[in-house]
Length: 261
Image 1 (cartoon, helix red, strand yellow):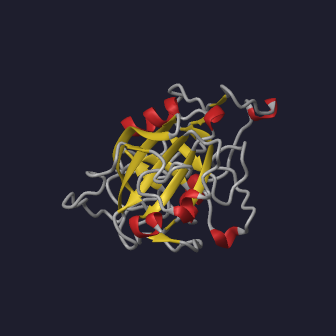
Image 2 (cartoon, rainbow, N blue to C red; image 1 turned 180 degrees about the vertical axis):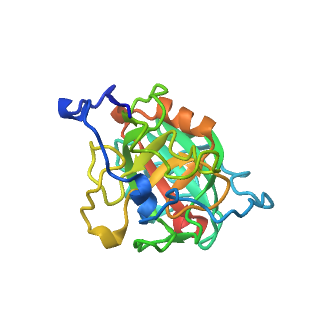
Image 3 (cartoon, rainbow, N blue to C red; image 1 turned 90 degrees about the vertical axis):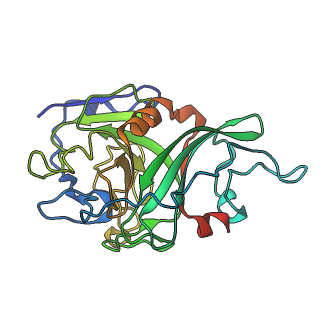
C-alpha cells in the first residue's frame, strides 16, 4: 500500500503524509456497502435520447442592470447560495427528479459573466435527486457545495486541490476486471456533510450518519450511483487540473426544475 499527500495551494498538517489509512472506501457516496463498490450501479445502460445540456448557454451576464450575474439555468434560490467570491462552478444539470442521467458543466467567471469551460455527460444517484438526502436513499442531494479536497488510487495528475493519493483506501473492493474497478482512480469530495481539509474518505459526518456523506465526483461507470456524481476520466482530469482553491470552486447540482427555481 502506498500513500502520499500532494498539496499545491492548501497546506495540510504534515501528519497526513505517510499515515496508513484503513477506512473502508465502501462508505463513499452516502451508503454503507458490503463487498461492492461505492456508487456501483445496477448494470443498466445509458439512454442518450434527449440527453441534457445540448442547449446550455455558454455564458451568462446580469439579467437586469445592477443584478448579480447568475449561472446559466440557475434560479434565484440557489444563486443566493453561491459565494460572491466563487469564480469557478461545476453545474450538474439533472435530466429529471427521478432520473440518474445528467450533464456536468464547468463554468468560470470572467468579469461579470459565467463562461463555459467544459461539459461532460454524467450520472447521479440512481433514484434521482432530493432536497433532503439520507443514507441509502440512492438520491443525490440538491444544493450548492464547496470543492476543497481530492484524491484517488492513482497518483496526482496535477491537481490544484489538496490531493490524497492512496492505492489502498480508494480501492473499490471489487474483483479485478469489474466494471467499477476504476471508479475511484480520481475523486473530488463534494463538501456535503463532511469536514474540509481531510481526505475524501474521512469518516466524520458533522450532521450525523443518517444524513449520508462520502459524496464525490468520480469516474463514470455508465449508470446511476448511490449518491455521487460521475463524469468520464477526461472530465475528472480536467476538473482536477482546473479547479483552483484560490477561486473558491463550488458544485451546483440538482434536477433542472430545482436548479431553475
